[in-house]
Length: 430
Image (cartoon, rainbow, N blue to C red; front, side, top):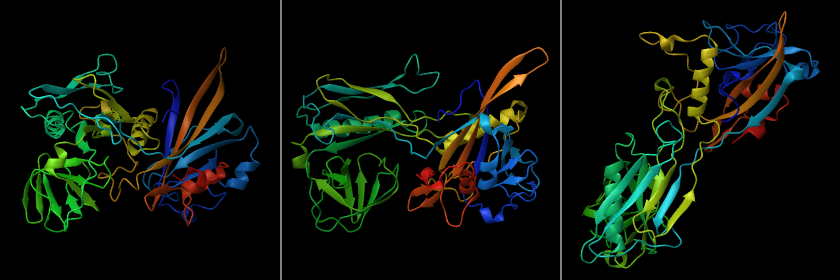
C-alpha cells in the first residue's frame, strides 16, 4: 500500500470481521474499553459518544470525530487523532493478492526451446532486483549451473540438470529458496491407464499415486496437470503407488487432480523450458524483515534462447505482512518504543497472521483499507504551520468460498464503520 508518506503522522485502526455490530454500545453511548470488545471499531465524537451513519452525515464541516478500536477490557482504546470532517479526504483500496514474478527460459508454454549442443556448459544467471539496501544499487548475481551436457545432449537432459542445480543453489537463498525452478515441456503427454491423480508434498521427492501405474515408467516425465505450461518432473523410481522424483517437488502440498506423463523417448525430441518463479520470503515483523514480492532479471548463457517474462511481481494490497508493518510502525507514534530496551519489549499486535494468530489462515488474514487523509492548520503564538497525516483503517475480510468479503450477514463493525463514512461496504469485497 502506498497510502502514507514517511513525513506524515499516521495511525492504524484494525477491525476483526468476527466482531458484530449488534454487540456495539448504542448510538450516543460513551464508548469505553469495557463496552467495545477487542477488534471492534466505531466512529465517535470527541466525547467518545458513538455515531452512526445518520448522525455522522449531519455533522458540519467544522465538527470533529475519532475512529476508535477496542483493544480489550483491560487495555486502553486505540484512537485516531481528532479529525475535522471538512478537512479529510477518504479513499479506499480493496484487497488484492500478491503476485510473484514468473520467467521462462526456452519453451514458455507456447513457443521457444532450450539448446541441444553436446558436451557444452550452460547456466542461468539471476540478478536480484529486490527493493532492499543490498540489491537496489548493486544487485547480487546468483546462478543455476553451470551444467554440462553429454555427447548426445537433449533438451530433456539439460532441463533436468538445470532444475536440479537451481534447486540446490537456491535452497539457502535466503533460507527460503528465493526462486523455484521447474521444467515444462511442449509434448502433449498421455494419461496412464490407472494412475490419474497424485498427492504431493512441498520439498519432498516422494509422490503417492491413486493407483499403481501401468504405462508410466522410470525415465519418463510426470506432469502435474494437463496443460503444456504445467510443470514436469523426471521419474527416478516407481514402487507400487509411490514415485520418486529426480528433484523435490516445489509446488504446494496437496492433491493434484489430474496428471499426465511424457515418455523418455518423446521427451528426448520435445522442446523444454525452465519456469522460474519467485518464492515469498518468510516474514516476522519483530525482526523487521521487509515485505515485497521477489523481483529479478534472468539471462541464459546462450543469448539466442528465448527468455519470456510471463508475470510481473506485485506486492498486493491488504496483505497481512503490509498491515503488520503499518501497525508496528504506528505504535511508535503511540509511544511504544520498548523495542529499544534491553531486552526489547515487543509492541502490541492485533493483525491476523497465518500460523501465528490462533485460527488465522491465508483466507482469513485479508484486509481492505480505508485511508482518511487529514490536514490541519497549527497556529502558535508567533507562527502558523500545516500538519497532515493519515488514518489507515484496515478492515478484516470474511472468507467466502476463497474470496474475502466485508459485507457480511449479520453486520460486522468494520462494515458498519464503512457505511458510517458513506462507503458502500460491498465495494471493499475482494
